[in-house]
View 1 (cartoon, one colour):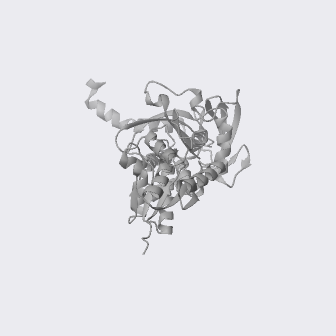
View 2: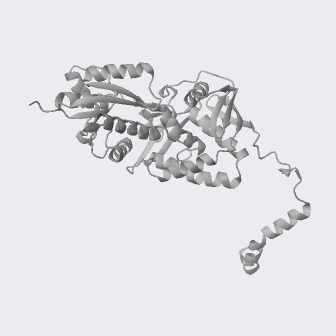
View 3: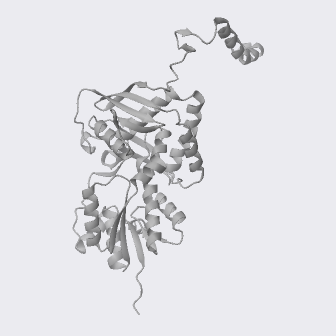
Length: 401
């Protein structure tokens, strides 16, 4: 009786490592290969069509695109906005968070078709191996994990030679830069990034500066979510993000260099361009200064910092993340209004807000101008009481003054 082939799902991006994985498992190991591309908003229709065509050529029995863009927005991205999440105050945690949702989609698909194994193309030197493996271990604990590139410590040239030898001649020549493109930003690795003293030249960015001068951008939020762009209402939040990206990227805003600690312990440096995420987070944070109390802002910042860190560290499935999301969601009930932003080449600045929930507009007083909610004697008494602990201390330690 003919032995049943082992069924493997390959997390397929269309790149070199996953292309090698599909062919090797199908041709040399005799697996029944299912190539699955989990799309969180970073692939064009043409790229997905090409992925399907190439997967079949490489030996996959079936190819499927798993569109999880909406799930990614609903379950994480909007909370990253609520929390103004920027890792180390710089990086919008784009690739980090997307990988988790790609991994979850792959694991669900593997369970659905009864796969014996899941394969991915991560190397042993990066964060993605942790994100994928941990997600698969939790969501598909009985499924084998295969990582040919990591286990064999394969070079790009070894993989290219194997593909060419077996009749697959797609252009995988080593480029100076490698890119991860997603709805929340594009990361750039390689080239000058590898030299701590250098920055990236203009040609390294996928989106070039095409506009000069300046213009105003108006972003309206309702309960913390982006609602309208320049007066145009978007029910589809993904399309709203893409609209902001189109406007901001023409000025080259959102470019930055991030240096951070990887999950595996080494330092990592990456360039990125993320017009939409930097503009939306910047505008949202600015609006919150007007609409939230001092302590709402303070405590939200504390938990949001953990939320971003846990996303980066592959801890999205940790139950406390649902508790943090509940707090972030509740904090947004009065974050309503329009933020006016001025765009210029390579920079942007916040001009002001229009909001019915603006706490700056108070009947009690105007900062630095007049008080209406207290008298001069009230102020003197408040200040005297406030100073009491200091007066007590220095009455016994006047030598320290």
